[in-house]
Image (cartoon, helix red, strand yellow):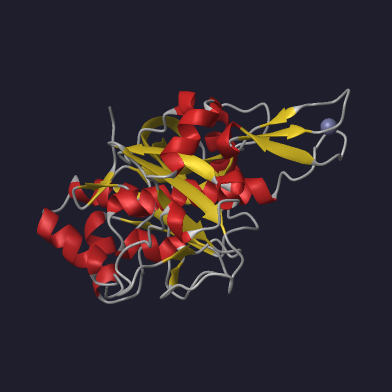
Length: 314
Ligand SMILES: [Zn+2]
């Protein structure tokens, strides 16, 4: 299976060793017992997670730290070995914490498991705040299955709503020995990345890729290969990463892009070295796509030296 990686490790938020134990979501007695021995992750209303003293790991609350009623609004995430994990929303200021961390910082600073569990929790809780009413009839919903479904409370409707995931394609375009990097006007100065866009209703991934490439660059993708995926819970995306060869290099930029440029591997290395180009954020699949391509042409030490020049200090 294709699996993109960042410097040898799985992509942030991907490959998390949590057993989601979906069958337990409908087992109230088991959930209640699990709660008593669980690690409980607290998220504030901005989607940040509480940190433990020292600020290097997530704060893991125990049921005894919380009022009994907290169980009713908690969401079961899964099992890490024998350890159950739950997530709980807390209003900012209602809980003492040594600090709060957002998801982007967590991906860079916490261990992979904690960052992944946090991403799952944040995605689920964000969906819960957006599904308090039935999208079909407008009546209030109630959460079921330990936080994983929202059922309409109105007799005669009763629709079940599920957390949504928005598929997006992200693609490194190549033509011969060069790859295309592009930027949007609102990005930080010098930041370039790959082409990306959401999949629309009625589209396959390949259709969406061809359309986005055409709309944004005027180029025609001749074929594509799947390279890997990454959950991107900002707030609910799944990034599906591809490499695609285009027929020629004549650009006709759409409204979204401010600039797009072709680089050979050594041209890109030089542009990164002198700071003319800043790579996509190190936690992103676009960074991994770019690294993967550069590694086919340059020594690994040169690739990482060029890409990491802009990695923020930890
Ligand atoms: Zn309804």
